[in-house]
Amino acid sequence: MDGLGRILLVEDDPKDIDITLAALEEYKLANEVVVVRDGAEALDYLHVRGNYRSRAKENPAVLLLDLKLPKVDGLEVLQEMRSDERLKLIPVVVLTSSHEERDMVASYKLGVNAYVVKPVDFHEFVNAVKELGVFWAVINEPPPGSVARRN
Amino acid sequence: MSVRALRSYVLALLAIAVGLGLALAAQGLGIGTLERPLFIIAIVATVWYGGPGPGVAAVVAAALCIDYFFTPPLYSFSFERQDVVNVGVFVVFALTIGWFAARRRRVERELHRALDQLREEVAVRTRQASLLDLTHDSILVRDMNDAITYWNRGAEELLGWTAAQAVGKRARELMQTVFPCPVEEIRAELLRTGRWQGELTKTRADGTEVIVASRWSLQRDADGRPLAILDTNNDISERKRREDDVRKLNAQLERRTLELEASNKELEAFAYSASHDLRAPLRHVAAYAELLQKAASAGLDERSRRYVTNVLEAAKKMGTLIDDLLAFSRIGRAETRMTLVSLGEPLREVLREMERETVERDIAWKVEAPLPSVHGDRSMLKLVLFNLVSNAVKFTGTRSRAEIEIGCSHGASEDVVVFVRDNGVGFDMKYANKLFGVFQRLHLPEDFEGTGIGLATVQRIVARHGGRVWAEGVVDAGATFYFSVPKP
Image (cartoon, rainbow over all chains, first blue to last red; front, side):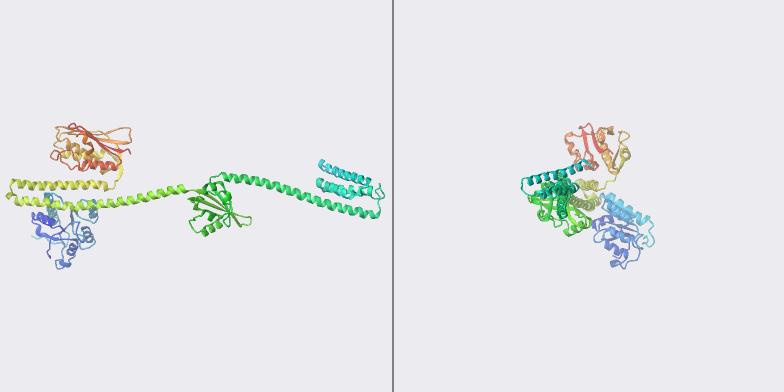
């Protein structure tokens, strides 16, 4: 649990985790991923506290954030990140089932970097996750203080 | 000197002459000496009918007559000394009597005049009072002890008691008046401003209640002391009842609105969780079927591979259904942003989008220009046009050359009617009522794909704009879909 990853995946559904990792695996990005299961755990990881207090103090290059989460939901995580000087620069991609406009509007208002609706079609889903992973974890130059890329 | 005065003096002399005649006759007949009483009577009569001046003349004449006819030496105006006193006493007596008579006469005249004035006044007042009886308002007067002193016919009609029954009774007790605030406050305001008005509930003679708009005015005497209160009452029971009805209806409406809002919220929550929760397992079904296909494809026989493919297709179909249904429910929940929309613009956008999908098709488009402007939500109206046009494109898929016409039928009606006509497979008019239902389809999925949401969406949007949708079709000979929106 003290792993260090370029991608922080915040997702409660084990199957979604499974599929997302399978998708990232195709680009050999799976071992760059740290998975947390709810908003509270995500905040613990980001703030380097609780179970994560011993991890190196570096930010992930990107956060893949589900909105509907137990305890602290995705929007709350986003809100807290954006009001924290150290975390506000981390790129956040909302990865959700929801097509709902109000979720979308709320996310963009909180300065999300991308909003992706998980496609039902597996191919589309794999493509979406792959592209996100490649773009944010490989192509995009992360803000200072982020985990360096492993070679 | 006026004729009237002259006549009074002649009357005085005549009265004395008659008195003298009677006195001489009495003397001649030996009845006795009656001249003094007779002259007094003559003088009083003169004063009564002629006034003080002739009275004095009569006194003088009488004194002369007494001296001439009845005081020795007879038939001469000379008299002895003692007779001076005698005649003097008579004159004083006669003057006194005359003065009393004159005074009495004047008092009587004044009395008569006062009486006449009074009668006149009574007549005027009676006329006024009967005028008050003519009004429909109920008017009553109370003294400062609340005792009724006047009660018009309007009051009798409204409250049931006659004037005879009501006058003298205490108003508050008679009508069991219910005041909106303490009576002392009303009284204080009345004394301060001279007026009060408000709504009172009173009980009629028959026991039923009546609500009146009551206006009170205070009457004061010359010294400013309160004398009486004039009450004017108007029956407002009917108005009150209507107001009450309106209030009740409003409350009902409010309750209904709240219920609607609640159920709307529920629906929204449902749609929200459907959006999140229904899609997730579906995604998993699709993903694992796909992974299974990839991992085990080699070991599966032809039939098993088909099963996996079917699972995938079914999941995908379900996904589309959920998306369409959510889009459909969003239309009902979304706020409409009403502006003046020139339908030509969204139609051009729709046709541009269609072009990309129909590059391999031969479609003859016929678009009437310009399409009218209507008042509506632009994006919703665009969705209507999109659904109708894409339906036309879909159902002409079997034609070697498709013909699609979009236009506007101008009528005298209050509505703008837009139609989309195609030469596609059409439909049987006996199923026309099923066209616009949710998930209603008239074709097999392998012939034409679709979820059966498009036309339901069209109907929902058009209904929200206050219009209606309908269609005409013939099997294998095309269809025309119409929608109407009120003219802007």
